[in-house]
Amino acid sequence: MGEIAVESCRLLPAYHPHYCQEVQKNSTAHPQRSSLPLPKPFLDYLECSGISPSIYSIAQTLPRYIRVKPGFEDKIPSLEIELGCKLSPLSWLQGFYSLPHDAHIASSEAYRAGKIYGIDAASGAAVCALGVLEGDHVLDLCAAPGAKLCMVADQLGNSGTLTGVDIARHRLAACRTMLLKYGLGKYCRLFVADGTSFTLLPSQQGLVSIEVESTSNKVVDGVLKEWTSRRTRKEKKRDARLQREGGKPELLFYGSSSGVVGLTKEQIFENCCMIERNCSENGYDKVLVDAECTHDGSLKHIWKYEQWGWETFERRVLDHERLASITSLQLQLLTNGFRLLKAGGTLVYSTCSLTNAQNEEVVGKFLSGHPNAELVEIEECKKSDWPCENGKLPHTVRFNPLSSSTSGLFLAKMKKWH
Ligand SMILES: C[S@@+](CC[C@H](N)C(=O)[O-])C[C@H]1O[C@@H](n2cnc3c(N)ncnc32)[C@H](O)[C@@H]1O
Image (cartoon, rainbow, N blue to C red; front, top):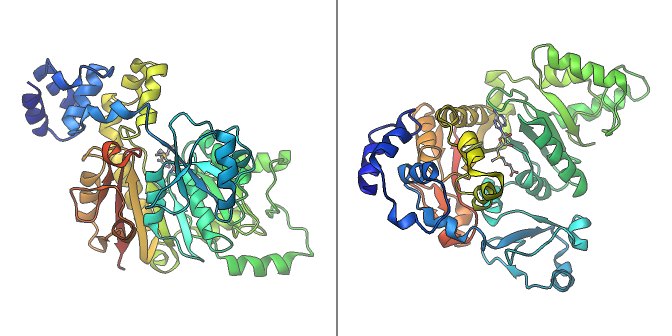
């Protein structure tokens, strides 16, 4: 019966409104699934997508991972004593350690002091794939809650710029909290904006610092000073006005070297607004599109529905309209991220879904319309022997929780040639 269901759903494009209905009609028994407390609509969805439900059997025992801020590796022995467990360094990912699944890092001194942070190893691999270099201008188009953004900021150190964008204000506020906690915000700016239409190029740091000097003796109305969480009423009013007028992105945070101090918000939008032909020259060196997805590869996320209730999952994730629109959103995010990339720049597309529809099919569709884009090898993957599997397109990879002991993740790395 299961086989029939898989065959029949192959006849329909993924996320076709009748896709899951078709499967439900054809499938009545799922013998290999019975031990897992997953609801039938989700099991049907997994079957349609070619994902084995067995990946969720390790959801509660999957190791935790932390990344140690460079220079604080000597804290590991005291952290082991504090947590009462062994931290095992990952041979394939520098600075990462695995911990037992039930370790509580939040109470540790190193965590409170911002020396370590929790981030899954597969997410760390996504950032590594981007290959951030000193001085790069990096865009993270779906940045919140910010684990990958923090790692990029750490890699940039005292150079380049980092622009984080997310459509969800409350999630981006959490990202700002993380940046501040870890002291990583100096070169970063965060915008609440729709990543499918975001148009701001990297800030021109050189130009901005000249401008700051030349205006330093004058009081210029509306010029951005050092960022503070306390804003005046006037500033709040101006922000609200800018938002209303043409739905401009909201600048939620900026660091002192992010290239915007000394400009007015109007200038940021005027000076940095994308002109199509400028992108190849003045676009970002690296773009990360860690797209919104169904999260089916994120075991911890899926397992939360045990507490939240599976009805919530069915409503939020398996809703026909949402499923139908998510691949279109992913394609739009990828297309806009690529548009903002400079010629010779690198883009990484990732999702924590393991379905073809949200990964290879989106990337394939994108490539067919962009002859100047090419999938390239993730060099680190081979060099450091990452525990991942090949994707269905050349050079794409997947972290399968069962074989990698990480959360599930798909990665595609591309170059923009002109
Ligand atoms: C997989 S999460 C990103 C995780 C993040 N990169 C990290 O490492 O913490 C996807 C994010 O995309 C955001 N998102 C959804 N639609 C968006 C859009 N149209 N533009 C920008 N962000 C969007 C969601 O709010 C969510 O925070």
